[in-house]
Image (cartoon, rainbow, N blue to C red):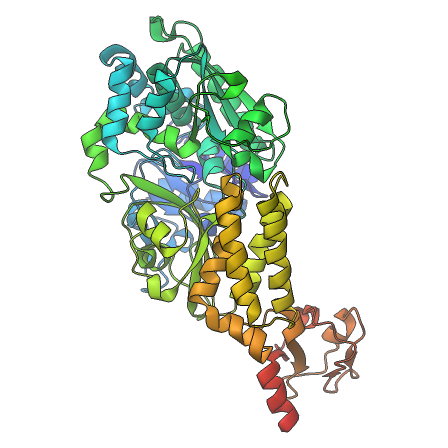
Length: 601
């Protein structure tokens, strides 16, 4: 029996839940037959805390410490599931007992996440029991280094960090580059808002990343590796540190690995949280103790990397995939996905979605299948509006592209990117102009400021968007935004600036009417932009409870207890506190068109 204790599972009460389960097992004298253990994140964040009974796969959700005794007594003694804790299908209303039958998992293909939620990440024996380090042994005993590289090439594996460059080709370039020693780096500097893919893998299955790094080092002839991980990921850092120590003890890391002539070790480097350090040249500078600024390429890191030596940089997900390819073969892996994009992709599915969490699907799966079959669609009866893919540097895709197969080629043609795997679902309450403004604000704050196009161009685009949101935009601003975007794309030094305009370009392309509403009508259709909305009180719903009166910071609410209230428009700052606090939902938002109707009435 195991419960998730990862980034999503590390909630208040999780340790208490574990202790409660252990106490219940002891209370019923089942300690010889039932073992309680923790795992990393199961991925289904929406349903945590989760308890899974293995090996049968019974899946309990929203489990609290007080439920522990019921699980032990009813499930193990009476041999009956605790029905109220089972997953309940939103469409059919039926309870689903088995983990594999829950739609969230049933519609996935978990290769990279194969062990997440199933093993204790702090026990190397759990990883080994699932076939861990067999790929390393196979590589060292059955393959020459060049044969490993050829196997990765044939698999079609592309980097999962965002750029999607051929992993095998990168390894080949590094091996062929003159200079010793050679280095490999695992880029775990995950900084996109709403992204937690790398973090979850490091917390749930760190040995898969370590094994992938060792195999890569053997293939390239590297003797030293770094993992560059955010210091804001303390659980991931701690578990990876435990895993590297256990790997050394078991002769998988260090001198003469598995009694061969190959030696390799890994150093953990904790980054300070700069988003730009996700760019490989900035990351290398940071490792060497310099300011994390990008530098022009070429030379590429495979020629001149850390300490001026050949260096190959890959993402957490890329390294975690390598052992599976070696174990199951390049042909098997290349049979999954599309012609252009082989294998699977991981997404952090967040936003206005019923089932948020970490998912893995094969390339070629459509946005509709991801958002509705796995994600369960948009909750609360609202309408799907769009999806932001690829993080701050990605693009926003509309409902008309729901049947678009997700792969590198299709994402690029649509104007977006896969990025590292962020996927934020939006409904009709989201303003696309404000969304683009939010991401541009994030990018300008995270820009290193080294090159003028990014430093000045992104700020200029942000200022234009802010004017539009404030109701001061003009139609000429759309042409200026597109012109600036093209300049920033073409002239920026690194990938951060080169992809920064994507949110602006895609929202103008697919949601142009919304921009026009803001500029021409001075109206925000989603009623999100404060300068373009007003709050009013529905007299038919107002009960005179005075809660809004008490919560208003500007004293804009007028009325006595038991009487219907009104809002003074001269004092109201459209902060929305009254709307959030009103228990009877009497506070309503009005856009400009609705305001004019109210005035006419």
